[in-house]
Amino acid sequence: MELFKLVKPEAVRFVAAASSKKWLLHTVAEIGHTAYGIDHNRAVEALLERENLGPTGVGNGVALPHARLPDLDHVCGVFVQLEKPVEFAAVDHLPVDIIFALFAPENAGVEHLKALASVSRLLRNADICAKLRANHDPATLYTILTADQRTQAA
Image (tube, rainbow, N blue to C red; front, side):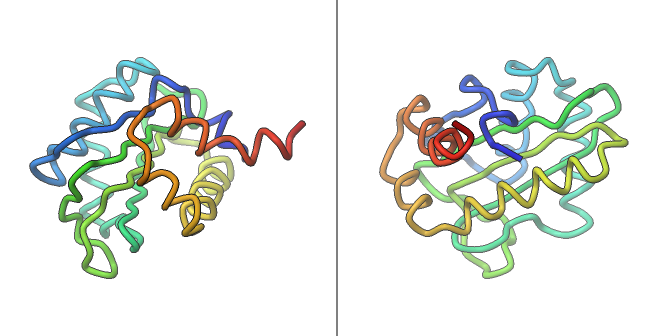
């Protein structure tokens, strides 16, 4: 699944500071509300419920929070880069500064898993993460996230 189909440019943000994981998840939900009309409170609740099942910090400063929501008709994403990493209970115990959240319909099934796999594959690439960390402009971050896939799709 191509990331340019998952995330809108307006759902990509650089955030100077986050005080906590919970604050960050509220920020992700707010961006989801602004970009896709997602219900903020439902999104926060669903993200927190998912985190209670097990942290979504996958290591190397990357977190992939995700949640299923009843009112969605397609999988969509929110990308946040933090200037200062925040504790996220990641598998490697390192704080995170790259967050790619996914919201999926309750019955998305395979579509949700494909989206999660695509994002995970991209953010396991150390070169991509280095480029993301070196930039703070949301338009540049969006281009980095989607450039390789747009080239391959053309």
